[in-house]
Length: 253
Image (cartoon, rainbow, N blue to C red):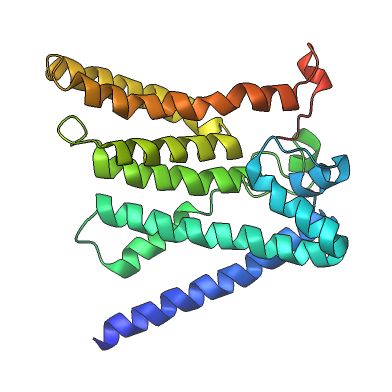
């Protein structure tokens, strides 16, 4: 009992400390803070400088915070907003790992869920900036990616709950929940569906062949939400690339 309580306190303390660090990180990115090794550049300040562009629903609060409170105070709220998403993703990854790796201790699962969130390229001072850019390859500079990652893990949780039983039971309620999840993840950022959609399709083709065509209606209900979620993609494309030449669009997405 004491060991469990100690693990719980360590997890809560680590999450709280990481939240504070992320708030300051995203605040500095928002205001282009001049750090010791260079300015904190990111897509956040680029987008704010270009004006409101609602190709992603995830960006709307950022514009609101800056419009309402100004850049300096708004940057703090943006930091809190994005940090809450990062912490939420860690918790979702923990739940996902718990579902996949049942029987593993909570402390170890949390440690791995924390490590999973720290995907970052190797940074070599001077060389990295000259060859690439100050943040090339990093997921942290692009806040729409952070939002997409949160929703993607939520979809994976839902997928693992339904993928083995959907031919036997998949209700209209499940259909609407799945459609909403796919719509939201694409509305935030469509990168996830580019990889997940084809993989899910291959799995479903194998399933319907093994089932010899049985439960075809449920099979269709399981796959259609991916198509419904993709309805937002043409709208996003028109916002990002309003001209015939893609170079005339907004490439900050």
